[in-house]
Length: 241
Length: 352
Image 1: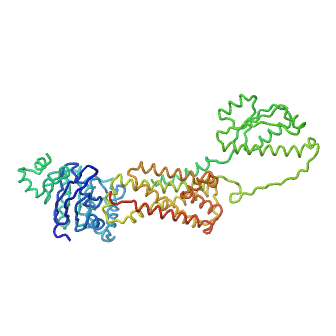
Image 2: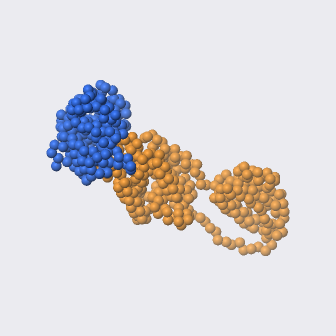
């Protein structure tokens, strides 16, 4: 069983033919952390996140998610995680309510529970009026917030966010991070990839990937100190060159 | 999508059943009559009074040939100038019939009609013109009276509309299902599904059941239209028909979903689905009876669910066959459904 490390990655390597997408990754994520998984485009972030979610298998290495083995216990892992992908993935032609109900039922939530939590959630988001609106008719920022809320609706142990704030305006991004903090306070471990370095500073710890390797890992303040930089932006530029 | 699903059957039934006419009418025959006697006129009158022929008269072979080349003539009949004289003197005379056999089936059927008319003409002159007969023959022969069972008026619309109904529900089931899952791959929602603990069988069932209901509804709708427009007989049990239809649809939906699991884009899925659709439909005996296909083709038909269901729908509706008569077909269709559905569940991967 896992003690404090809810994600534990040892020597993870993923190859596509001759191309090595993840080269010998080693790191742990502690329970309750907000972990930022940073890296340039094509650094191998999405590849790794897909492995953690049980969407693909590594070429070699050991990975445990919430104590479950990535090779043998993918279905148990799936029961205990939430995932929000880079591509928007709620059903466009279903309403807000229908999307929430659909995913919540897959995780086995009861109808009463779903109804209560949906009302609560939409009230919190100030979005009750859109309950019966189709997803395709609501703006992107709202979609992203809804997609996140759906990903944590079943109270998973970990939520994986793959560039959740891509293409979203700064105000909505801030609101989005409020949601992330709230989930974290509720005990959900957050594993997030992003391009925005100001967002990196919101994380408890970050790792920075370049060309499939993890080049740096630590608290943002520590990294800035170590690389003698004032912002995470500068740290990133030094590492990724 | 909903309007398309319901307008399609009406349009298909109305247009295809009326247009895909298997009856031979409007056969254009050009008569070049070089004999001016009454017998030759009697012969041409026989053609004119037949409902199948449009008779026109030509003067020369050249003219007639050019009309045939333009596809304006199907048959050229030439009556030689000493036709009547020869017939009286020698008791036999020749006429020439030329058929446009670009469409071989049409030419063969037209030749059959012509033979019949000429046979009747022969009979008539034997009976009506005894003066021609020097030594009267005892005119006794077997009279054949045809009776056509299960479709006494030989109404091709009844035969066609059952076929069109099968096409309809096949399109709905095969195409909607094969497009659906691959569409989720394209828009990315499948990834969200795949990170949930959903069971593979549940997911496939969730994809299958809505389309099954739509297709069954479509069948009911089509049956009502066929009943109203063509007075399609419903001799057998409709309940039995719907049960078999459900089994058949599960096979087609399973096939569609299987196609969807092995493809990455809607184009790929469309091409593969279309391939199966075309082969299955053309070989199913919708237009021509499957029994008259070559033996190897009939063997291929063993794995053609459309052919089995085509038989079942006609047997139930036209003949009133019950469970006992079609249990073989039901058995095969059930086996087919189970196999294809298992394949789809097996091939659907939650890792990608």
